[in-house]
Image (cartoon, rainbow, N blue to C red; front, side, top):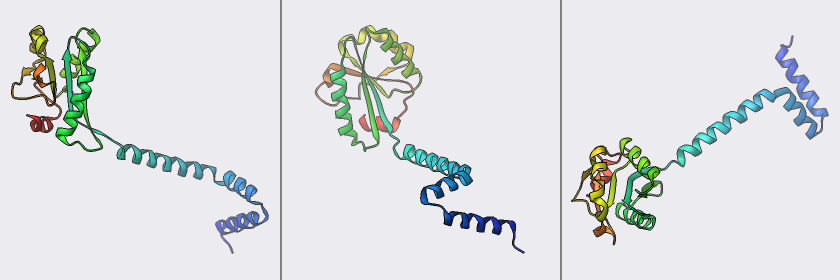
Length: 175
């Protein structure tokens, strides 16, 4: 006597022999739709996780350039100088951006980043340093005369470092 599973398997095999390819696919889809959807979902999730893990970047240094006007061009050059000095890899990021202190949202963002331990170093325009002493005291930042800015703008800026930094090993390399 044959088991039920063997009878079902033989019936499916005989049915498939009589059908054309499009009808076979339709029959299999109807019979095994749940399994196909589950397998496709698991494969899609595995591929998604693999891509997100392999494409992940890591910030190695986070720097802000602080002044009373837009210093975006200087920030772009400083980023290039740090990338060259630190010899960063393809998945490593040096985050350098300019902060215009005449813009209140920039001030708020910088304060939040310093408080959240997201900034390694702040370069301040020497001519506006005296206007910012209250800010430095409130955020616990200290002047770092031993850190020199790479490139041609170094004489115009002075370094300030927050009490806690996210990338102390990288910061030690540039001191």
